[in-house]
Image (cartoon, rainbow, N blue to C red):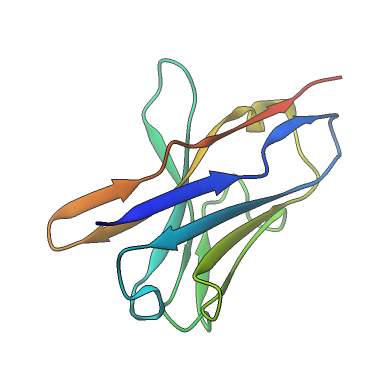
Length: 116
């Protein structure tokens, strides 16, 4: 059974930083492309970052490019998202996502709130 558990969210001031983690289990972590997405109330999911299976290739949404960094540790089955220069509009629930075989898996999410 695929399990994804996000953590690391919290309340941070504008300009601040956070590191989100996603602990994965139930699948061969090192063989899959993974994503970070976020959702705000009343809106759909926004794809933020994608990382290749071996971590050598990454891509980002324009809204977070240059501020967020995705990484992974395949020895720990863990995905990370480093959030820097946070803005109030980054406030959202953040999820790691696995899309495979026609199925999409997400964890319960971790809330990031950016407020003065």
